[in-house]
Length: 185
Ligand code: IMP
Ligand code: MG
Image (cartoon, rainbow, N blue to C red; front, side, top):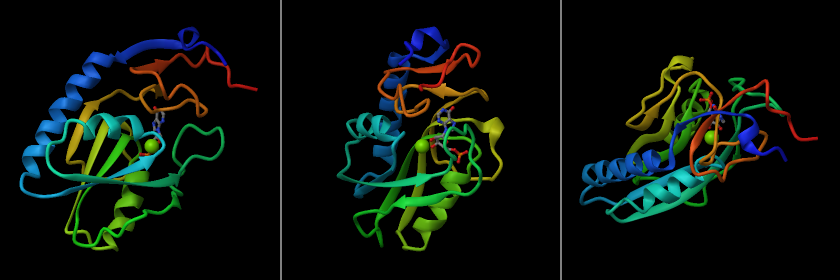
């Protein structure tokens, strides 16, 4: 596996900046849901680091569940618009206050598909919290209630986001220099 320093173009969001913004988001969400129970749904796998840090900053009673979708073909770097649900929730969301927690909204196809799917199960409310928002790349309008950072149209990695399934564990968000990155064998 290549050392990330070989292809890192720039750290665009440091570990400190991520943690500071996540605690602000946690405080904001806690105020908005005061007196209610929050059910957070994380989309695997990219959202897990964000969920784990965000939930520690939330002071209202909360529960979590997971789902998975596949949007990219193998080796592809953008959504095709053909988003499939590959892992369903464990629990019923009817009449619950649901917050969808995502790592990044890019074209918007993933979130749009997931929202449509969740709406059919009649939650009492449904909101979206994404850590990163690539606004420039949006191809379908999606409602975003909470976002951490708006980022430029560059491929990013770290803090849950992968390149070919690797590098999710890095504590910061970096951009890739494609000329220097070599996919694993
Ligand atoms: P969308 O359906 O185009 O909005 O894409 C959303 C999904 O694509 C995210 O949940 C990520 O898994 C993935 N994705 C989009 N941009 C990036 C990136 O820059 N790095 C890593 N994954 C990304
Ligand atoms: Mg994702």
